[in-house]
Image (tube, rainbow, N blue to C red; front, top):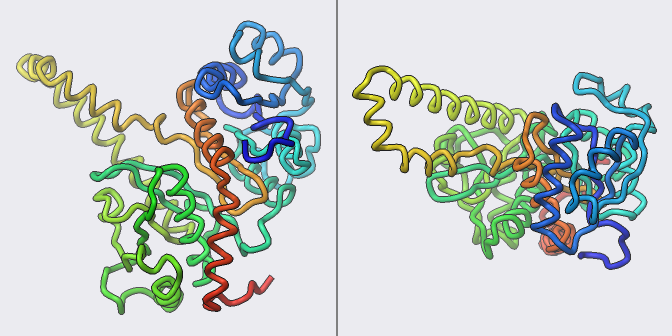
Length: 349
């Protein structure tokens, strides 16, 4: 663990998600096997969660249950969620803010989770704004993409910060020693884009990660795997993410139509099935479940609300990687090295 004084490795929002608490507890059954030394603070309705937890022996051995009388629904506005101090999400986040747990995982309301995390856990002093990051597939392996929607409008400083955080994230999550980094733009030429993108590129070229910076990249470079870390503002990043998810769904639907269109096509499916099974496994969205809000004084991971046990377990894996490998310490080191170059203006906040 990053801090042996912590009571729990992670706090878990047991009531967040479409299939909570069952999917959450099934995910913890898998996580308990993958992380035998971990301890989890499970926060939720004691009567409902306790009975379900008792039926899952591995999870029960590594979890302590804390009662939460309230649940933040998926359609609740963040401003209302902030006033619910007894919710499972709030109490799990409180455990991180107090130092009782190193991080939190929730499949609940995304807007509420981001708002609560930023206000309760707070942003690291070196960082102007936190960013939402996730891992996705590409032709050359996994790729990190940030920001995915936490910051719709960004300036050059924010983009540089995202690059520093994305570099540290890729080192921890992907195991890369020198991940390549690119700024998403409307073209790869140096003169393309607006002033903020060009200013961010200039700072990155002269920074301690300048050797890793590949300049501007375009949308097709994300899936091509041109770089390991794709940096952009939250508006563009969210559009790119949703477009990619839609393209994957379209591909699956078209393949299903093709292989069920005729008897010869069905026979072809039987011959191609082993390869298609490998493709399905490679593109399985559960493998990429677990977006992380980078730049906070603790680890905050958002699981997809509709995921199953395998997907939730992967979100726990992401959080455990961040805790075990001291992700926040890596961020601090990156910003100290960047500040030594005197290239990043002080935060206006």
